[in-house]
Image (spheres, rainbow, N blue to C red):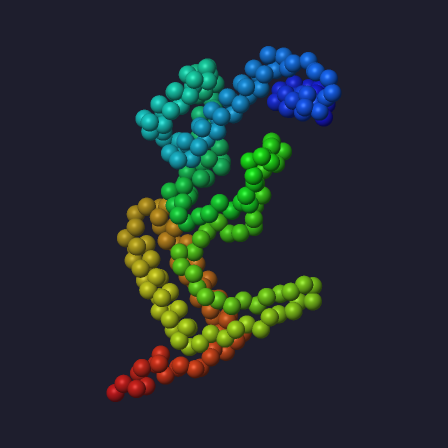
Length: 235
């Protein structure tokens, strides 16, 4: 790696050359170190402004303002630059979208959605990769069977049959959850919570559609039907 250039890349390049070189190299100039450190300080303050605005929607609390003021003094940032960073964070599309969605207030509904990256392999050129999984974690899991497509030949595994007992049990459970969520949505005044309840109802709708497809693809097992239809035995 060449040590040409300046800034963070040059410092890492010289450090790598120093480790591999048979002779002692010239030290990195102090100005290069200071410039790299200054870049890190500015980036950290910018990230802090963005994160706090994600949590507050741009309306900082007293505690958050004190945090920024303390960091501004610690990092020796000019007032004009610090205010410009905060203003830019408040107008950033990602920051405003996260704040408006309220996802940080519903952490229990999400998981990381990225593959693990060991700390010793992290670099400016490498970041966590999306694992292509949904970020939303269902509140309840429904037993389901799906057709599995294997290879380019499109082979389909035969779906397993659901019993009438399982179908009725799942329908009753989903019905109770839909009724409870609908009641919460009816009396909810928060826009964020309303959207969350709508997402849950949409999820229940998709679960019902999946159950319908399973029944259509594999007729249910009729064994045990007497135990789930008491009306035939009650007079």
